[in-house]
Length: 339
Image (cartoon, helix red, strand yellow):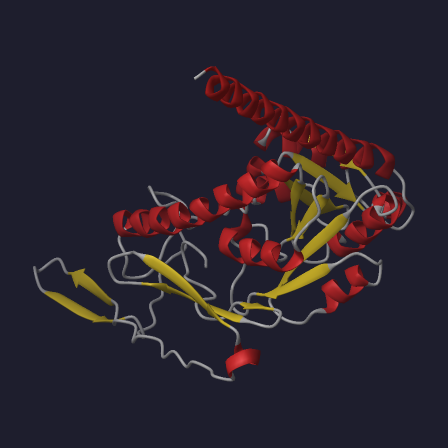
């Protein structure tokens, strides 16, 4: 559910089930799920009526009048409109900035609780989790398939696929031989920590494995939602503009890695790869960037080495945790024996 527009309430569908998210008037949020295949029931939710929005005008003679938003106004264009100004950095008709901030805090706080539980699950088992984000058409799924084909003989992998509708991408992933679960978000524009937690329960990823999440194609809302992943990986293709990181800064600021994809097409395009990277680092100076091509395989070795390093780090942390637990148990046994 988006913190601004409330998209996707009651629309999420994890293969075999359905879940509903509700935001109440006081800003609290709750989500519940139903297995429609099992119980055969369905819910219909009617949208609450949208209050009318009025404009008030005061004239030079002191008189005033107001009218609804269906009236058309013609104003001289005096500059651009920026609805990203203010504490909420967004605009919803009829809602104050303070109220928007409160709703966002409530939603993200609940989401972060789920995300923290997901991350703890991954850390306890030495699993390395990545959240792949991009706009539609960046080649995200093709890149994911190529990555899996190059790694699947070396380690266990499972995948969560997020899309508004269809299971097309999950089917492409399953064709590689690795398990994949499709989450359809309906009107929703991103995955959240609760959805991914349900997917983990279904997939049961192996210890010390790679857990890949392909988010809904969107460079806006997924930036705000922690899924419990260790890194967000933003994918920008050379068929997009070099200024994309500047136009959608939140996503590139939230990411740790950027994959500049479809680089095999650079000879045929008027795309400045150096400028694209410079723009990305203007937003996030610490961004790790790889130039890759899913079709030719160019540049993928460095990307795979980075994944392997992340896996090794997760396995190392798990080993240290297990060793610490063993030492604690041994100490407790020694203390009991001494009594």
